[in-house]
Image 1 (cartoon, rainbow over the protein chains, first blue to last red):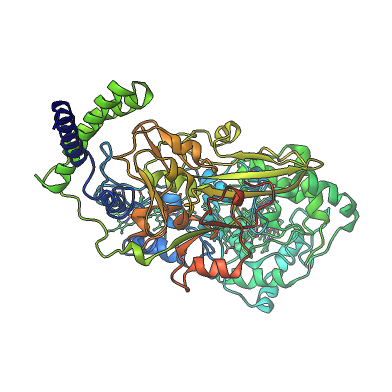
Image 2 (image 1 turned 30 degrees about the vertical axis):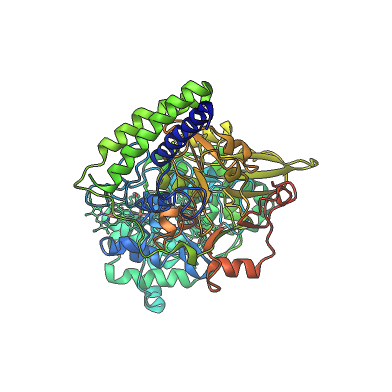
Length: 346
Length: 284
């Protein structure tokens, strides 16, 4: 064989050896095992530790929150609408920091070495799903946050884990009493609250007829304990003994209220102007959505206005009404008062 | 030396070799990228300590037995963006407004206009509403306008049957697994970003920290353990559906059977595996 051919062959052989060595060095063993990729990479990617643990994992230690939540509207499994614990509190697991490309199968788990946050700004936490915005479908209940909550946190009223349950300070209950027995004790009240619990311009007290019993009972108890005070009523309430409260309030609650219909014409405008943030609790028609909250329908305009001013001024206090009343100007107070005074009673 | 460490060393060596080669032959961008990855790679090798060998993942899982698919019911989406947040946390995606594995678009048709206004959580107005780039929120920017029609569309990688991104990858770093997920082998990715440009859906992005391309994996580390992807896990209204098409009882099989579904940009021939209900002609 001519020398130059041998040299060429040797060169080619040398090149082949180098090429094969390089290839063995460079290409991973698992490359081409399945396809044009490193088969081992699949298992490496699959190895990462999941962070979100699922709501069921929280039950064993946070039974109180879990039970409340699992019975609430945020756990409507039948329609596939479930707001999971970790949506509001963040994932219950973490992953060890990933140096470069290494996948981490380990990491902290709550509660051992990972703390979970308690949301403090519920206007944001709840607002991401409930703020009224364009494109959000109507089946999702939405509120105009400033109208609905003023400057308050949602959790002031809504229980975070059972949003249709309201905060304790908003709930009052009273055992139903005997209205007939109550009537016999209510004689003294007529002087100021009217003969059938319906007041008029010449009487100092508000209408009690048709008012929610739980609210009336809570109000009387508040006068007795000094939580609410009024030069007239504090003394009057002291004369009512605790056993009679349920009877008297049942009596007034069973009476029918009356409407001063003359102001009704103003109503529509008044409602537009200011009552939007009241209707969630006091209803559009002045009949409250909860039996522990006072009805406003048929109440005298002056009393409603006075009550709002005493909330704003601090003479009367309530976790919700105080801030709401402070946000109203005097003309606004007059407008809503007129509106509710003109609303039809139940 | 355990297997993992060996692999790491081997890869580091290979990278160095490629780096020199690239530098000598091509010069240019590829070499710069590969070169700048090197220190981290070495660090990775050093950090793998023998006393915590990573458990061999998902032994029982057999990829040939599954065929994953994803469904989106846009009529249910409330645009809360919890999916975006969950995805970022679960997958350690950079916590800024411009890197996303999944995102949500809002289409708004104002009265008298034919073309929609489209925004996503990365829109400056929405970032301003959220207050920070780490919180995701749609602002109430259309409250004073007359809106004809509006809806949200969650988006993510379509895990196509014929993925254009896989075709263009020069190193075999991105590929379609046997069970249908399109994933990236970050140890092989050289950060050239051809795939980012090839994807017709904009589903890929460059991860500037790791200097590699990143994308949705359908939370491969979760689905191989029998869990749902993080975005599906947190969706409060079941607008996102995921499951195994081989299982006729799975939510996705039922979703596909019960709905008339469509895919995004069918004309590109990528054959997506994310199926949509309730989107409009302008969504692509």
